[in-house]
Image 1 (cartoon, helix red, strand yellow):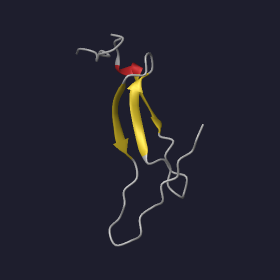
Image 2 (cartoon, rainbow, N blue to C red):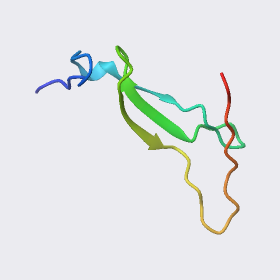
Image 3 (cartoon, one colour):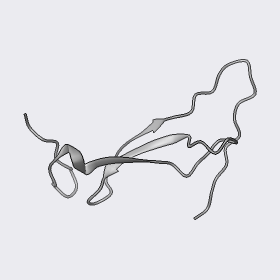
Image 4 (cartoon, helix red, strand yellow):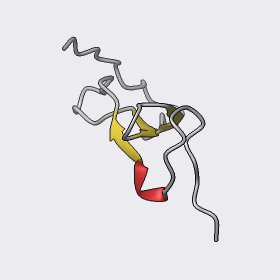
Length: 67
């Protein structure tokens, strides 16, 4: 089976695709997104939602943390 290759730095291997929580958080301090990226060069493969807004209720408040 072929290993994935980063389009930026050309490093190979699934273990080089990592993810981390976004800085954007809901009121309960849970991250809104998960960011998948290359651990070698930082190339972003995708951003995935972690927080689901349920209909009929007031939605969560977005909190931006500055680092």
